[in-house]
Image 1 (cartoon, rainbow, N blue to C red):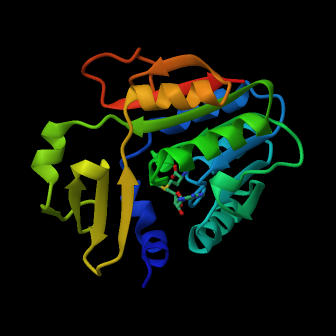
Image 2: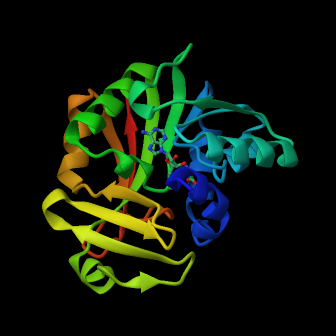
Amino acid sequence: MTWDEEYATVYEQWSAHMTADVPFYVSLAGEANGPIVELAVGNGRVAIPVASATRRSVIGIDTSPEMLAQARERAAAAGVDLDLRLGDMRDLVLEEPASLIYCPFRALLHLPTWADRRRTFDRVAASLEPGGRFAWNAFIFDHRIASSLDGQRQEAPVPHTMTYASGDNRIDITLDSGAMSSLWWATRNEWLGLVEVAGLEVEALYGDFDRTPLNDDSGEYVFVARR
Ligand SMILES: C[S@@+](CC[C@H](N)C(=O)[O-])C[C@H]1O[C@@H](n2cnc3c(N)ncnc32)[C@H](O)[C@@H]1O
């Protein structure tokens, strides 16, 4: 099985611990008057509660047909409307400008290079209405966590091994079957640089989904930027 095929089958287990982000993105969506878009929508874990709370359709973009199939099924079961589109966030194009574009669960870290991220931020800026928001979260790299996890097989939430390639700021996640995916971590200044070159402005930078301001002990960047 490819990573996408296998990941879709284990994604509910993989993401079960991640719940705190949902009310955060739901509350931003509640303040959006126009189209709402989730980049890397996955199985609809966040988009479904967003669509349910706002009673509006959410456009969800993802490169994985397997994840989109799960999102379709789960949205139908929840009775909400998702406009699911197979596509790459680097090529984002919308028919009308969005009020809110958001990208949860560190999915921007799947983009390997500055150029990939720059292109994505440019596409986001071009797709937002004036005053529209872009929100995302990404873990803060911590060498203490890295050294404790590097090369160690972990049973939970799904058996896997993480290896850290510091020179490429990359983490390879390998499932027991051998299916592998990578994440490339970014620093606060890289995020701030992306915001600036895309012509956006940082509205808020939190260190948690409860809107605690970022501090030296934070584990997560939670960004809200505005066009
Ligand atoms: C950790 S999951 C996040 C899913 C969902 N947003 C959530 O919060 O549960 C990462 C998702 O990113 C998707 N993905 C990875 N690279 C992508 C890209 N370049 N464009 C769009 N989706 C991408 C994967 O297929 C996967 O569904």
